[in-house]
Image 1 (cartoon, one colour):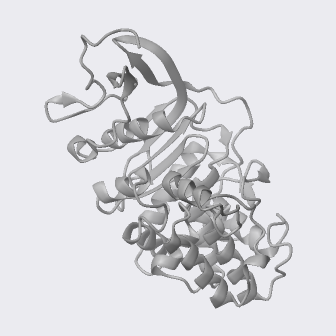
Image 2 (cartoon, helix red, strand yellow):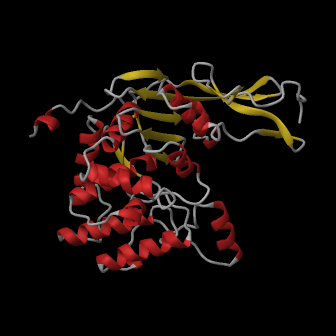
Image 3 (tube, one colour):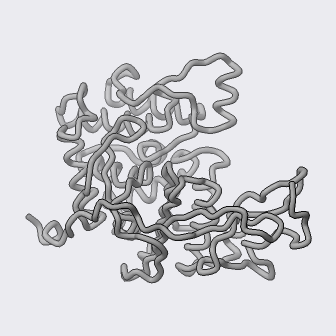
Length: 352
């Protein structure tokens, strides 16, 4: 056992997370709803600089684990870089470039779409999905948003002589390798293993551990598997997500930052100097994920002006803005002369 491995902490507690309010749904000056969740901000030295809610309870990061899974596959010999490596860590929109990239990984592995074990689905991107439906196209494994990861998993197995048929079994050599990497990078044992929406094993860690892992990936020395994943995702942000996706826009807005979202309201982001944030919205709401993550990044020292486009969508009444989703005061921030959490006319009607 290495010295690093011996420093891995025990698994986080499995309990009902002690989430707290992290965002208010404000309509016409009245709090109409509350989003609960948890937030952690890490300083450059890894210390917890700010926290809200329960950052130590076990939870499922969902697709926010993909950068860690990609690191594990590189360590196991996966020879991808650039766009294809970004796709291996992607929750892609199902655009033609994503489908073509996944086909290319399958070709390199000398396997076919029929070898994929992810679930058939329509494209994740709204516009792409709508076009797909209009054209009468059926769900496919290639279009499913995790297909790049699954193709990379097959390629890793092929290179190592591991079985292909059961590559999603938690006891498979690939998945054991991924679990070890997750534990190393998060600094804690996995609390529980279940199945993600795509069919791959999903590892439960803490929000704190997730932030720590992405900080270690983003701040790793050049040329390491961690740095290769960070470089690929930052340089090819739309390959890791899709056109118009907020996570790609976030990486463009803050140069050098690595960011990844996950289903059920998960967001993680980190900077090369070690600063990192992680967010979990208890009810899984995307409308709260983005503004809360932006507020956490300001807490981490990012210039609020760089995040002016991430305050969230306005609430409409009669077709015009009458409210917004605002981070709670402990997380609130401003850009320029206007608060990013209060851009609605306070005299707007209180009904819609």
